[in-house]
Amino acid sequence: MAILHIQEMRKMNDEELNKKLFDLKKELMKVNAQIAQGTIPEKPGIIKEIKKTIARIKTIKKERGVLK
Image 1 (cartoon, one colour):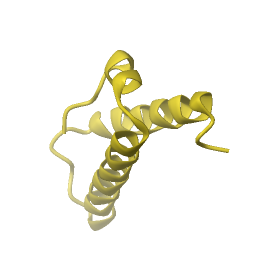
Image 2 (cartoon, helix red, strand yellow):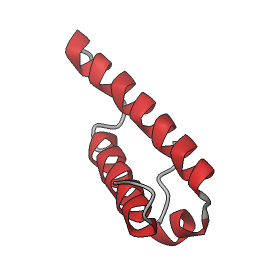
Image 3 (spheres, rainbow, N blue to C red):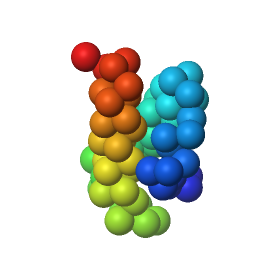
Image 4 (cartoon, one colour):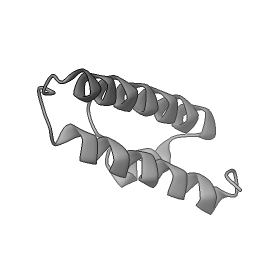
């Protein structure tokens, strides 16, 4: 999954941000499950990027007043 830049995320509406947030959380669960099983993910650095992108989306939502 491609990681979005902050400018692209700011252009999205709330529904698109929620969908993207859901997809990222789902992907993070998959990667964490791989690690729990003992397999090495294809891209180990993707975990950090997913977490950062989730934080960025939550920050944007908080700025808009959607997230309390």
